[in-house]
Every structure is written in structure tokens, then in C-alpha cells.
Length: 199
Image 1 (spheres, rainbow, N blue to C red):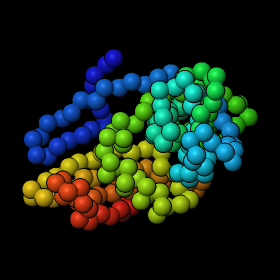
Image 2 (image 1 turned 90 degrees about the vertical axis):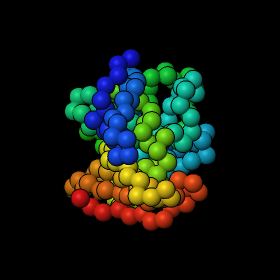
Image 3 (image 1 turned 45 degrees about the vertical axis):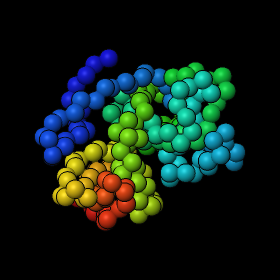
Image 4 (image 1 turned 135 degrees about the vertical axis):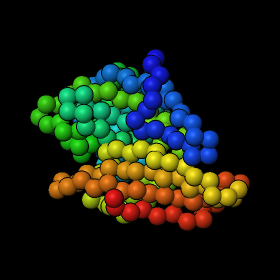
């Protein structure tokens, strides 16, 4: 495994340290599906604006987990949520919903494309980033979140920390960048204020 300064950096303004992230991209393949009415996770394929996927029953990934999938042929990325499991499929194959497959710039007539993928540790570990992601997806229902990054953390007082995240959203017509921020009390985990804005 390589260690390097992640371009989606985590910078703590309190101690001015850069954090290193361990990268674990896996090479595999993606297929596509229109999904079905019943999933092994009990979550509809339409969840998360159809940015959903199925993984092998032998995969280490679990229902509801986020995975970042990258098309190495064009560099396009998409964040998908696991909603189903496929018995007997290879562990490095992800079955994407058709909309996610197309968001990667892939033609459905091809059927299978090479991909690189990884769990989204930044998003899974930063619950406020996930909170703001869901808020952003609700506010922009015709858009798909294709990229995200942690943009900073500031502590204003002992009971007030602000975290900022940035998201790239894509629709059939255009792309927008959104900045989300949340101020919370770290002792109680209660939100003091939050907001999203186009940048």
C-alpha cells in the first residue's frame, strides 16, 4: 500500500497538521442493471437518486455502505450505495444501476467496463459529510453527486466546531459545485446550524 497526501485533504485548522490517507483502490469490473423490486438489503434501487449498486455476497462491503467507483478510461467517478447482494459473483465486480453506469460515461451497449473502486472512508468516517450529502441530494433531486471532498474544520469555541464539505453534482444538462457547512457541539453532537450553497 502507498501512503500519500490525498488531494481530498483533511486539514485541521487547530493543529495545522496534514493527515495521510491510506489508499486501497481495487481493480475490477462494473456491469449494469435496472434493479428489481426486492433487494437483499431491503433498500430500493431508486435510493440515492439511483446511485446504487449490488456487490457479491462474498464481498467485505455491507448494505448501506458507500463505495467510490472510478472509470479509469475517462477519470469520471461516482459514489454509490450498496442496496443488494449477488450470490456467486466475483468479489471485484460491482453491478451498478444503469444511471450510475451512465454517469461514469459508459455506454450500456458495452455491458461491462473496467473500474477502480474503494470504500469511501472520508465519507463513512465523517458523519457530518454524509449528513450534508443527503441534504444536498434532497435539495437537488435531478442531480447526482459524483465527487466530494472534506474542505476544512474550524473550532470557534469549546462547544462549536464547523466542518465544511464540497460536492460536485451532475445532471443531464450541467454540473454544479456545492459547499455544505455544519456547526455542531462536539460534546452533545447537536447541530447548531447548517447550510448549503452553490459555489
